[in-house]
Amino acid sequence: MNCRLCASPRMRSVLDLGVLPSSERFLCPDELDLPEIGYPLHLRLCEDCLLLQVPESALHTVPADRPPPVARSKRGAEARDFLDRAIGRLGLGSYSQIVQVSSHDGYLLRHAVEAGIPCLGVEASARAGTTARGLGVPTVTAFFDEAVAEDLYREYGPADLVVADHIFSQVQDIHSFVRGLRTLVADHGTISLEIHNALHLVRDKRFDSIDHGRLQYFTVLTAMRALAGGGLMVVDVEPVDTAGGTLRIWARPEETAPAQGPRVEDALAEERNSGIHSAAGYSVLENHARATRAATLRLLLDYRDRDLSVIGYGAEGYSTVLNYCGIRPDLMRYTIDTDPLRQGTYTPGTRVPVRAPEQLHEDHPDVVMVLPWSHPPDPIEHLQYIDSWGGRLVFPPPTAPGA
Image 1: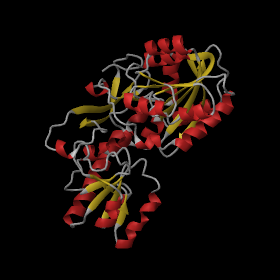
Image 2: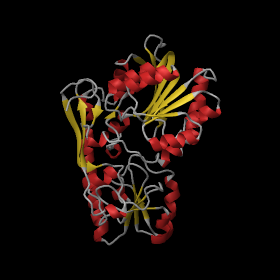
Image 3: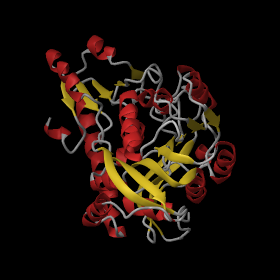
Image 4: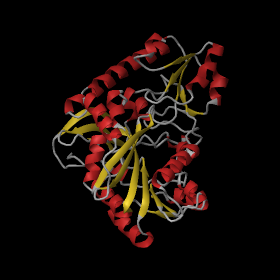
């Protein structure tokens, strides 16, 4: 494959997780005897521009019209807080316009409606868009790109603020997406993107957070390079979720952008000091993943040999762990998921049953293993009741063997 950002053929393997089914495609009971389609999940680094990326596949060409994730819908308080700060920061009011790309069920823009600020959502899922419109959020059903941005600009005019959270890593045509942002934003306007920070992925060895839902993983450096290709300049960055490793990037059109804020250089310095401004800095991820897989399987096999019942516990992000490590129902009876949409289903590939948290109280398992590893479900302290029946709460290696 060639680099999705700079088209270079100089691609270095960082971590090959094999051919895995879609991490979001949980199975219904009547699908257990049906085959599943697997897709390569091979993380590579462009040695020229340093963008981390996985190959495109048929998975990314078929729109999934499903209900918006429960976790995103629950972000009401966080969304209101962000929008209140953005309104104050940019001086937005009834004379302004806010556009959100990948607006889902209107979880953010409904607060703009309440504040009396004109807004528009752009959402690929027709079902999610219908939910948003039911909340009074004007929403266009479309996959955002340069052509869609031109149509929106002609019909609705420029936006003072364009928000694009958690979508930058999913787009296949980075350049068309960035040009679309520049087309849509006013010359004096601002763009805000929340991204999963590749610094945390590599430095903290979070291979469990790699899945088919993201085609690329940006650092501040690579995000700056991508946005610059469309005439946008990064003017500020701020951490959003230090546990999950997300980062908010603020950008402006180059011709009107002020000087970069000090936090941009601080973020770049942190990346340089972590070694990820060179290809060599990415070499630790594969060795760590292999060692963790081996240690985890040894631990689970030991539990099985001792006839101990093992249950998994986690929210999003554990499908990669189960498939890469080969954890099936003979090693883990079922896993707990707090999302009602997944309860009663089976995990992709490994087909581990998914149950509601109340199941723990009924079964009193010997061991509860927390998944995913890089971003434990919150609040983890609520699981301490497992001690009441002599159960153990463990984390996978390297911390779990001593548990």
